[in-house]
Length: 248
Image (tube, rainbow, N blue to C red; front, side, top):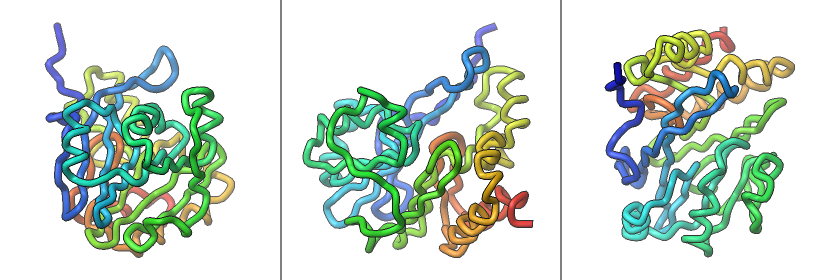
């Protein structure tokens, strides 16, 4: 029987306001993981306006319609790849907005190879960026990858990528996917850091705990995730829930 499940979050490829000067764009499904166990991942980008400039986080495909919406909202100033596996559509955005500076998390160039062949800047520190006054930057370094998190102070919006994933069972098209997300610790309503990602922090749990406590201290109202249902309210408590295994 053909599955009627809708794995994405329509409407796709369009700006959706979530707070003053903050939007998300829900993109298409990608498949990621070992070849015989690839999972469908709905994708999501975040757009934050600072004055008339736009901060583009983990960009999804740039359709003509989305490009027109972006240009009506502001001028892209910064295009951000927040970890080594979130970079695929950055070249398209760079071609469309060549005046925007591209910032990449460590190891993206290694991962991307020739896919990114233009000048970029590295996200490797917590400050010294042109968006510092509006957005806090927090690199989280693990043995496999560094993910860079962002907090928009005015709207109390925390922007994560794979640090928390939260797949809704009703959007998964097989019992295997539902089982894998539960075993992986990433199934709604109890989404969290994927268990394989936790292992990359095994040697420095104290540092990871300090990072999580920093984010809780920001007291975010909402948390935007790249994959799955994001948290519209009570963000600090969602962090405490998702990282209870670390904070106890």
